[in-house]
Length: 182
Image 1: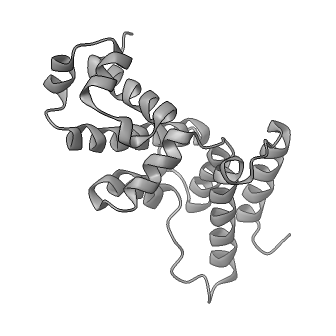
Image 2: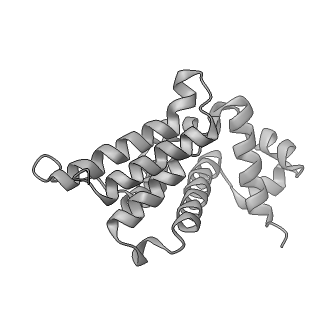
């Protein structure tokens, strides 16, 4: 099936962010990347702010689709530990420059952070009782480690071999399944 122009525009905008950063996202740069006219971009996104908000939703949707694919079912059909295990395995895929930059930008804008936060709350919610419950603490530590695994290459300037990434992710998933260490 052929992607819609809207998806094509959003994928092109992500490509601009990947190559040149968030500030480079303009109607003209996205139109050139998508091989559409500026008017074609503006038809779908009347403002740059609307385009940027849609990019965040687009990537959050893509992230959730990866989580569902890994788990084999939507979040509402899984146990909390199954959701977190899928989150950990998906985090074993290294972050792209575009994802990192957009996540950082979202930290300053609640409307941009909302799509990311909604996915995160469905798949790896924060543990409010981590200091009192060892199993909650193990899940929180595993989630924080998974987040670090996702960002690792971006902050360390080192490429982790794929087999090692998978081994780390599976270790963290086992911690979630048996937080007492058994």
